[in-house]
Image 1 (cartoon, one colour):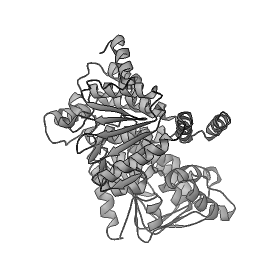
Image 2: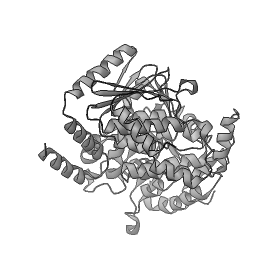
Image 3: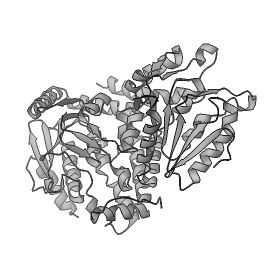
Image 4: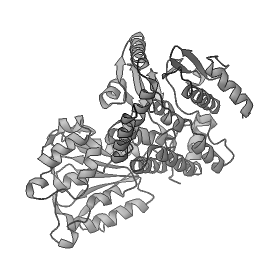
Length: 245
Length: 255
């Protein structure tokens, strides 16, 4: 997976860690690479989870090319079917902030801050913040951030549910890897279907969502991993080596 | 499978407050509340097929019992529930049949649609479906010994008691993923902080007093009003705010 112009990919056990080659990226540059990368992640059976390493800071500027101004990076991240994590340090602003919103687990350093000031630049957010942020931190705080450009520091970010864990700069990468390796110990089919049920369940009435949950569970019934897991339970054997089949 | 005749007979007996010989639950009707205790302590209060059938039956009867205003869940043992009984898994002959039963004889959907307030009292472990039952409750009071876990992804399963839907309605997205996708254990103090439970105490009798206060308060409210307000609040998280607002207008004008 070294065919990307703007990403560096490092393989770990059943997972990949992605970082940007430069801290300051243009949205139109990333778009092609990310589109390709998301497909690769989704269809590679050996990748069960993904982490984005922004522990050296990162920034995403709007595209120069008019044709790509409204190309959504966030939608591409939302299309990743497998669990996603990110490690963040420093100031995360505007498009970079929107980029981390669809991720499933977020870790940051004590020095991190989060903000959006598009509205002050005679613009509004167009890459998902108005829809994703209220679901993450609640409507009132999201309005403060989006409409008044209010910043969140690391402590506030944890309190408002934007960040799972705050840690120090020297520990952040290890913590990210630890969480990544934890999630790849689980059945990859179960994590993908659980993620799907949570994300798409958000869009439909609760009872329909509960029925969709049953359908996804029935698909899992026929998987080798499920049969292996239940047999292990019944025979009191330790549960390891899911195959994702 | 029970005959319809027997079901109707049982239904009438539950309405009269008679305690049937339940195998895995205990049911008591006092004044204007119903108390259901999970009672499968030899298997850590796991939900087996019979227990789910019993719960379905008792809930149906409680829902049409005009004397009852509140339903209370608790357990007879040190733990609330260890979730689904995994020893019953992979025993159903057909995936299609199992899917049909899961979808159309679904206890958890009945509980989500149960119109009266549900209060749950938890201690020790609440795992999988046990945890999800708490999320189908309107108020959860927890002893400080309480621990919560959704281990499904560890067993190549996904939640099937509404967890992927009800957690989203109750707590912030990040915590939903932390619990369901990363299978992280939650202790009582964090559960209170993130909104999974309403109240915690290290004194179980104080929790019982707290429940009694809630029951007393709720009992003073007209049942029709209680049902409408619960429906409206549940509707508010169904995403369509305009329909919810219209329903609010219709309901308030009919009171």
